[in-house]
Image (cartoon, rainbow, N blue to C red; front, side):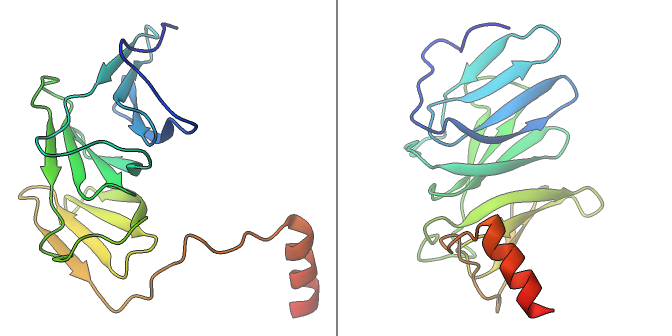
Amino acid sequence: FSAWPNGFSHDNYAFTGGVFDGSSIWLVPYDCNQVVRFIVATGIMIGYASWPDGFAKRGGAFMGAAFDGRYIYFIPNEAEIMVRFDTSGLTAGSMKAVSFKDVYPSGLPQISFRGAVFDSVDRCVWLVQCNADRVVRLNTSDLTMTAHRNWRPASCTTKRTSRAERSTLAATSG
């Protein structure tokens, strides 16, 4: 396997998942400065850091991604936008900002989403909520979003229970 791409840098947690396009694994940038493509057959890693205009990549930016056969949708965690990456062109303009202004006019809550799934029947991406108070559906053909409100926000800061605590809870709740 090859070395990290030129100019690659990261903090404690470089990536939070990846998507597979049939020949490469695309790593989701969390605390690093590039999207990294790992070509499975050769072990070569290629970095992409041409972020959309006006987007300042910072730590904790994305948490998961979805792939629709051509585009990768990087799901915002601390970022204020979703980034759609065109895997067919792989040029400097391959990354496009997708705004949430229609479904969150005053801006996304911090730690908004924790991944997404691609619905191949309806050609949409469903974002898995974390601190967001609505489920969001992205139409991949025109990049419009629909918010499904009246969901109680999940809390991503809840205390994790230990295995012993879970066993005790199971024994006493039955």
